[in-house]
Length: 220
Image (cartoon, rainbow, N blue to C red; front, side, top):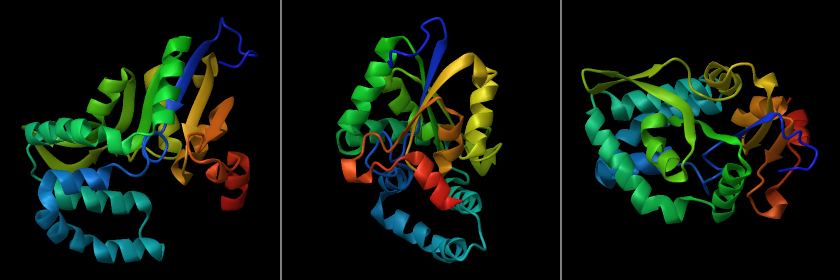
């Protein structure tokens, strides 16, 4: 923990998951693992046109995410998905997780900070990872009715300004905390801008660690 932090102030340490604590996205690999290569390939073909529309900015990333979830998870049994998520975590943990990221989470826990993941990936997929890390989880919620996924989201996709709203819903006014944040993509800009101690691609190789303020400026 930086020496200039007042120890009487609560520290809230927030980690993005995909690409920050992991080497790459986790949701697509999870879907491939859960459904198997054959069924995954048949379903993912339906995403070709929506992906092209997103590339042409005729569809937003959030809308594309909703199409992905509807395509794969409509009518899926909640218990089945939970079991697959636990298996995925157990099998893919060594391949997926960045050792430096794991050390970073451990350091924040040991410092006495309140630590959480804040991610756009579905909570049902990330829960086993958060539990293994021993930290809280704030992420995109999937609608479940009578034990089945409807293919809809509960609320919005947890990225960009939605990350701040979700954090405020759980922790209240963020100004009462010294906010530390780790992120790696456009979906983390608002979180990083709100933090007193922001880390952009902190666990990546050195030549990928741009200063996040420069990245924000270039994106705007």
